[in-house]
Image 1 (cartoon, helix red, strand yellow):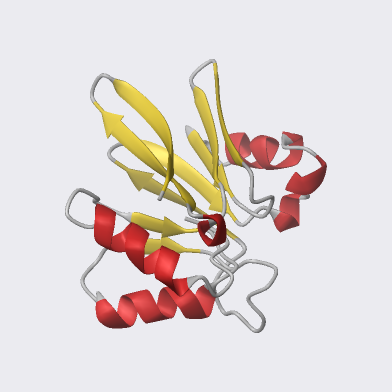
Image 2 (cartoon, one colour):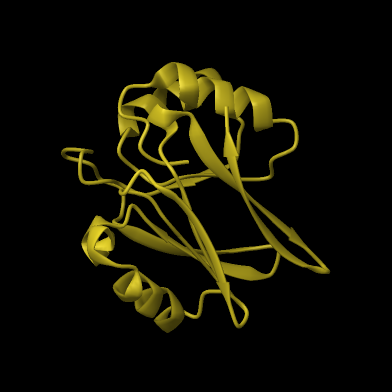
Length: 148
């Protein structure tokens, strides 16, 4: 999820819709206070998060790499990698971090791509009712753009 921009209702709707089938929520920034409200109501969900360009005074990192179900996921809001001007810079960094999956927001546009074992997704903007899901199984990885 990314870019809630005060659309807390959409953010809550997404979390409530997915919480019983989701192992981990990843918030890609620009709505840090909104996500704090989700965590206040649902303190037991597993999550990771980074800060966005509109998350003033955030103490969260600009990017992060984690391992989930044996796959490395690199994620950032995207602005430090200038994603509004192309995806090459963030993809290069994700690959340098050894990631299998690269996630970013910032542009508000849903995007998925697969290239030779490397997956890229922008889930779109929560404020537009858009989000994304990643299904990691023994047989492969599926990127699923979704909308409320």
